[in-house]
Length: 180
Ligand code: ZN
Image (cartoon, rainbow, N blue to C red; front, side, top):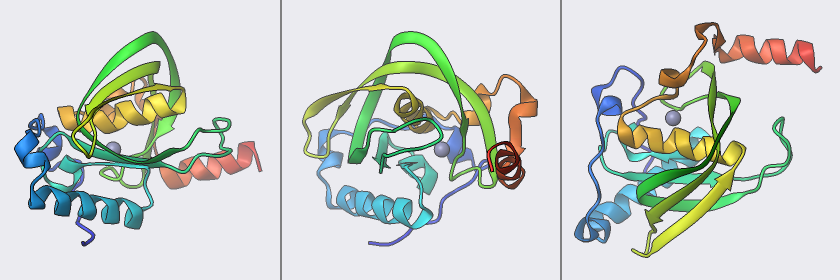
């Protein structure tokens, strides 16, 4: 197990559509190593999600771990560490809300992105079972951000007003002025 380098915006892998994972590949020793590396890498980076393309593996695999609890967005439900293979998102309600998103592949920046706030995700879990998760609010945004990576998309692609792409340090300074 080891922490892997996270590639950044500009690396072509982040713009590729990732390949589906077959059952044979899913159970391979290489895959178990990759998942362990992704968990180490996510926890070392202090993020809430990591997609395989972010460590330069263009396959349909992502992990998410949300601690939950109170936040600026209200109380967030936790998501225990979950491995997603070949996820498919279905929008259940197209009503959107916006959040200031950040990305481990775009360090130092934040952007305001509006996305649907009620989605379902169908995926294959770490044991090979078909699984479904229904998510609302901030968690719906998290999962769309993460699975965008598997389609070669980044959050900056969704920013409608480019004045809403900012450096995180400046953003944090302004937040402190608004709510000390
Ligand atoms: Zn990201």
